[in-house]
Length: 218
Image 1 (tube, one colour):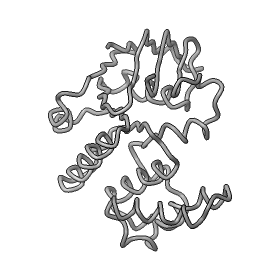
Image 2 (tube, one colour):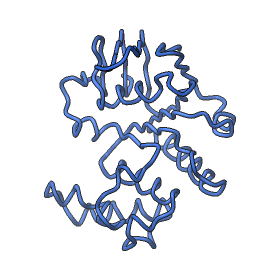
Image 3 (cartoon, rainbow, N blue to C red):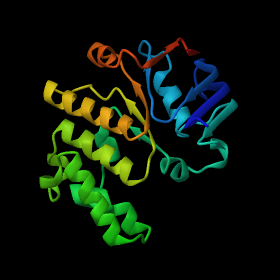
Image 4 (cartoon, helix red, strand yellow):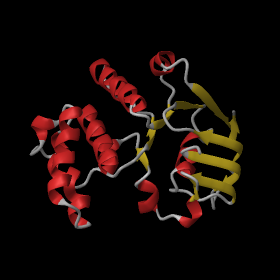
C-alpha cells in the first residue's frame, strides 16, 4: 500500500481558469520523488492536494489507504508532514522548546515521553543547544530544521518539502541532504518540489514527476 495514492484527480480554484489533472500517481514508503515543473505549472497545488490542504473536485486521494475526504487535517498531519518553502509560516510558539512540546501539552499526552522525544530530535537535528532561543532569532536553516522536527514530533511518516533549498547556503544545503538521506534510511517517504539542479543531480536516481500547465506527467 502506498503512503499517498492519487487517481483520476481534477482540481480547479474557485476563481480563475487553472485546472490540475492527475490520472494516477503513487508515492511509496521509503522512496524519494522529485516534483518538477515551471513556476505556475501546478506543483504546489499538487502537493497541497496530497496532504489534504486542498480537496479535489473529482477523483480520489488516499492517505495510507484512507480517503483524504474522510480525514481531518489533524489526522492527515499525523501521517503526512508538509514543509512550507518559508518554514517561518509554520512556527508560532515562541521558543524552540515550546515549539516542540506545545501540541503534546495541549493534547494532554505523556509529557515525560514527549520531552524525551523532543530532546532526541533536537539533538539529532543540531538544535539541542538552542532550546530556549526565540524562533525569531533562528537562521533560515535552523527554522527549517525546527519545522522538520515538529513534523516528526507529530508522527509523520511521509514528508512533502516545498523548494527546501531556497535561501540556504552550502553548509545548510549539505545538512538538509544528510537529513533527507537519514529519513529515507529510516523508511520514510519523501516528495520534494524543486528547481535546484544540485539537488536534482544529487538524487538523480529518484523518480521524477513533471507538472506542465496543470498536467501531471508520470
